[in-house]
Structures are given as C-alpha cells and as structure tokens.
Length: 179
Image (cartoon, one colour):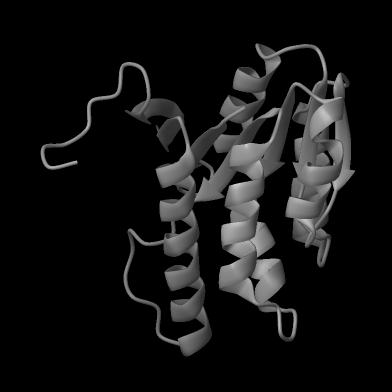
C-alpha cells in the first residue's frame, strides 16, 4: 500500500497522532511496539502507551525483527503502526553483527511493498548538538539515514511540532524551494 512517516522530537505527539491517523484506516489495526522494558522509567512509558491505545489494535512487541513481522502480518491488517523505529534502531545497535544499514533499508522496502498501510513513527535526533561520544554520533548518523530513507519512500510525511502535525510530503504539503 504505502508508508506514512511521522517524525518529530521527543514528546512531540508522534504516537498519539499516529494512532489518530490509524483510527481512520480500515477496521483491522496492528501496533508494533519496539521498546524493551529495560528499566522502570521505560516500563512506565510502555504502560502509558498501552493505556493510550484503543483495544481494537492487535499489539505485537517486537524489538528487532520488525521487517519480518510486517512481511508475515501485512495481509491480516489494513494498517500497521510501527512505534518507534528509532527505538528499534537503538535495539539493533546493541546487537553484535546486526548489519544495521542493510536492515534499515530492508525495513523501509518491506514497509513500502506491504499490502497494509504502514505508519512509521520516528524521532528526529539531528537538530541538536553533535554528540560527544562515538556511539551517540553513530546513532545520530544512522537515525538520520533511516529518516531520509523513510521520507523518500513515504507517500506522506508529517513532522510533529509542539503537538501539531506539519505536512512535509503528500497532499497539502508545502516543500521548501529546491526540494
């Protein structure tokens, strides 16, 4: 079907907006949660997200094999929300020999070819200062690459700013000169 990429900063309203968009797409809805409950604060975030989700969503907790899950489940759903692929990326960074760039490309290709509409939720991490350590810089570089790949393949791209969606690509988008 197509990708709808929803990006923005931390706590910008990406997840709740993705759920609102998904609510208007068909009856069969899936939510792919990529977070791992590694500490108490993350467990609380996960629980808050679960409470925010309507019970009509089938929930899959998948921290690593998101492309495979979309490939397997696409025919069972009208819309699949992946929240969030930036956490998925950080999960991959912790895996030895993860072939991260290949897996990023695979995720975007599988999402673009899926029979279900795929809403990819991701964080913008490149608007701040350059991180001090090599791992954080690598994460920012990979997240930037993943965001670019998603935006390139997506039919719709929304940027969340202060809880408001700004259409960057698709109907009613107002791209900058030179885009």
